[in-house]
Image (cartoon, rainbow, N blue to C red; front, top):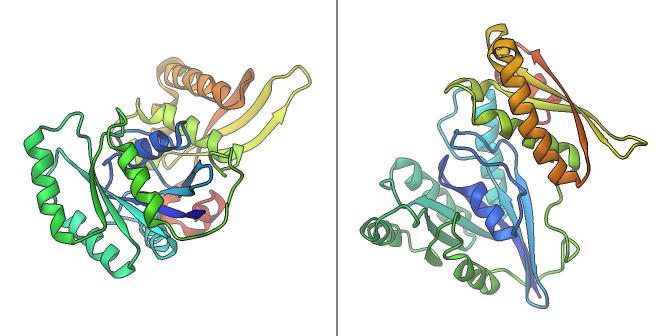
Length: 292
């Protein structure tokens, strides 16, 4: 039996979370076109009985940090690389390989774990773009190169085949039927945040986080979720609530529907909006909000 932890890395918005969800076969990580959608390591588990177990660790996109939160996210990625048994390094097939990709490649070469380069977004890239990315990436001399679409599932089989040979001999880290080790409170807060990310203005998503204070099973079978949307300034609070409360109501409804899929039961979502001034720049607040 082979097993191990597989770090999924790349620049922001190359499709890491979408790929993890497709590999696992269910939603364990939220997705959005906004940078820094992933702010914690998210683990998804795939077990091929009698062959191998891969624990995929979805990481934030590596970027030039602008504040304490950005520095923590980059440190989180580098820490994950040092513990990884294998790495999926995603490159966007529709965008030229740039300095950020080369920096990640250099870090991976130093780390020494086997690397599969995943050229993602083949569903929207031309054949010429995919061939060009594969040719340029081949200069990194990693273990394998796989053109993939995280949306359609193209290339998933070859990725799994490669992992089946690259992972070391090891135990089952999780039960065979388990798909994630994330607690319900983490999944709930991420689903709430995802519902708002798609609707918010360009800069505000960076200033938004979510805290879940309580999840309680009520006697009538309803799951009660007490959550707070946290922003940095009073003006942002007004945007999140929206004129006449329309933003809070509509995004809250979408979040509740996703939570009901998660819990398989009716959900009462109690949402409020709080201001925590400059929370991204304050280590003590980052600790309290659960950023590693």
